[in-house]
Image 1 (cartoon, rainbow, N blue to C red):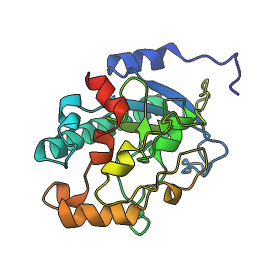
Image 2 (cartoon, rainbow, N blue to C red; image 1 turned 180 degrees about the vertical axis):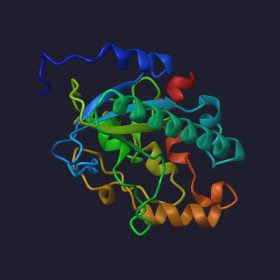
Image 3 (cartoon, rainbow, N blue to C red; image 1 turned 180 degrees about the horizontal axis):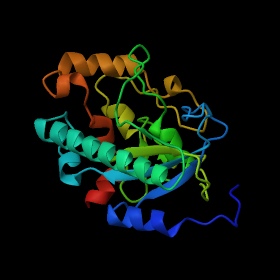
Length: 234
């Protein structure tokens, strides 16, 4: 639990407002293996936020990706990286350690993952839960989003973390996955990714069938059919 005496600094609220970020929060990551700062200490906290994708583009890829989606995916990722660097710089100016987490950067190509899961920071910040498609689902935007994360040591009111899923009995994403890479298991905290997603099957399908779209790094079907996203479009 966060210390109730700790409040969000006004400068951070204004920074988020200035950059039109409406869904964000702080995550307590002291129980996780985070990157280290310049002093060799692991970061205890992270700021997590959501950038929504264009809903019309997302609704248009229920049968497979297209170039419009690839361009939107790249645009939003680049925007997140710019914001992450800017926020990390702002934190350093104010005397705190900080480190931006790159968007969609596979630093571990063998295991097909990055330095730290954006989704872990987001669930710990209370922004949403992990659906059966292994994507973060938010109330305002569904899973039609990309995530930004900046590690820091500034103490902020965190969470509360979301520790259950709200997908009910829905398996639409599982049924729609052309790679049959989704197990259908419901997420809960600390559940290994492999219990939800066969990441190699997903990656192989994309490379074999969608290489002409972003060199096989994008698909998006499972997210496109999610009712929480379709509700946003309506």
